[in-house]
Length: 152
Image 1: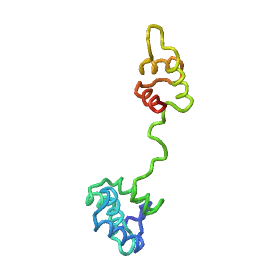
Image 2: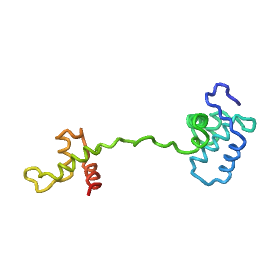
Image 3: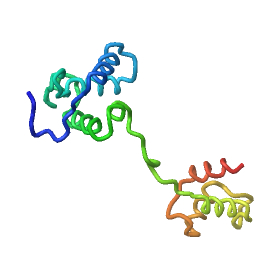
Image 4: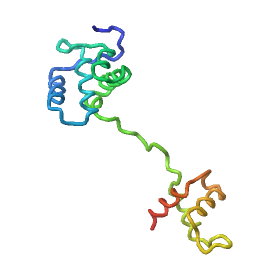
């Protein structure tokens, strides 16, 4: 059962193993966390652990072998707690289009006189003007609305 070519081998101490077994037996918690605990218990290569292969763990728990590999890697590199918890994002998914300086220019444009033939600025006109002034390459009027809502 033991695969000698595994790069990240999980060897749980007795206290860690008991903690995971308690977590799984109680069954209260996020499904993801419980699944990760079950994966670690089955992947345990210590004397008390079953040391299942990644394929067998995947089949038994309904996850992919890649998931099992990632859980093992995080446990070995970052510790048991990191393997159980969701990985924290180090930055926003998408960088904001408007930083402080660009928001200031948006506000300045919105406070200026509206274009010829218009009584006031619309969100779409402001978005178009930001592109015309090369403040941004492209922007949605909703992004303009959210930025202006923050300032009022």
